[in-house]
Image 1 (cartoon, rainbow, N blue to C red):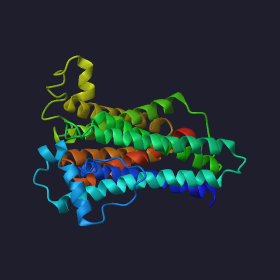
Image 2 (image 1 turned 180 degrees about the vertical axis):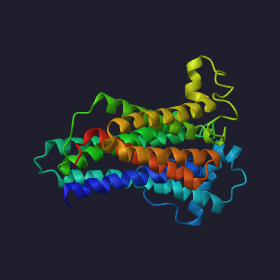
Image 3 (image 1 turned 120 degrees about the horizontal axis):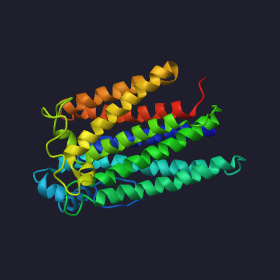
Image 4 (image 1 turned 90 degrees about the vertical axis):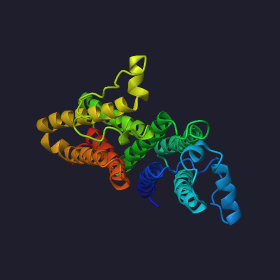
Length: 315
């Protein structure tokens, strides 16, 4: 296969992993597999194997405090969801390794170096994923929200590297990134980070009104935690407020850029507006699976569009 075909396949694989990861989170499936076996490929086959895995799950806080009445059939559903996410991660690393072998004789040293870096980042992502899962296997029946945020941001980082390599392979003309686009990417990145933190804290299930939060512009518990800055990290209400604020700030800034250069920011305006619409609907409906997943997928599209706008010359 041509390098561009490999890179497209890897980009699609990352999108699939983020998508299945979103389904895993939204269906509360992430803590169903209590062991990390990076070289194990097959799910439980026999009924005995399934019972063994279910018994391991019964030792977790999630089962004790939330899923005490779960049946074996119910466990199989959440297990297979998490299994699919992990299997995709293993396949992604394997694809990177195969790609490295196919370009061993290429003169493009930059490509080899960057794919090797991405390979090690893929391994690191698996380690971060297990570290995240472990955070929910001890006392708290949920994964740590900052662990979840790091896991997602790493996925977006890998996604960005592969996109840039693909655009270079396709012969796209790159431009020097401007300060205004650095600010744009920073705002979008921070919004995505807070979106994942919001998800980890289950903060989408509180204050399901918009634009006010139960009649208030700022939630009443905005300063409950000390020191004050901690509210922006671990206070679920303020994490939701910050995500809202950053999303609207990003939209406002994009509108300014769009007014100055209509054609360059037209697509980005459309996808950011769509993303915010999905976010509002998801909030008002108290996080239904379909809209929540659409909101996450649209975040990928927003980042892709913003990165392309910032780096690629107009065609």
